[in-house]
Image (cartoon, rainbow, N blue to C red; front, side, top):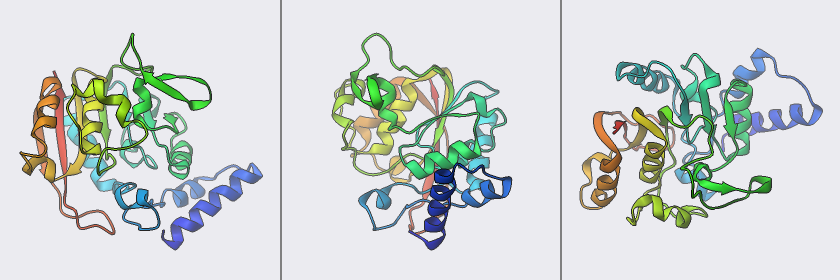
Length: 253
């Protein structure tokens, strides 16, 4: 982790411990937090927390408008510090998921009108119990989220092999197809809670577009729910990685 990130984490811990309020200058400062993406300190840092630069977030917002989004509920399933929702005017329409404590706290401070859960996205489809404990898939509805069905699902999802605490519980939603990649599983989950005609706009690895054999079974499942609208290839834009990401736009059937 960079020295600036460590300083920001300590800054937040100190102010929260003392119950101090945050000035606009404080918010600007903590917004510079860049996450652990590419860090070898933890396994999480290698694949997750590549926070999206503001100029890409603006492009994604503008693409949503171009392809028909004109208002309504928005979901960011992997929120980080909230960069992607920054361009949206009405933050009260935004729901976000961010399990990282620091990322969630920064997003809350930046956008207090948004609804932000410190949970993994998969919990949106599971039976809620007490103390943020979740069981098996919901049986009588797809999700407990009040913003459902969403007009727009937009995010930079986590990457890598999909094998975590929740993955085994999601098999029924995957049509018995093994979703080997977490980012593609997040595409499916996002589509499931879109309204017909709603948009899904994701940043993802260029492997999704160019790999047929490995990803084809997963793409077929996505095709049950959505039509492909648009895609854009970007240069390497994330620090500490040379991956060239794509912006993918799907429309819910």
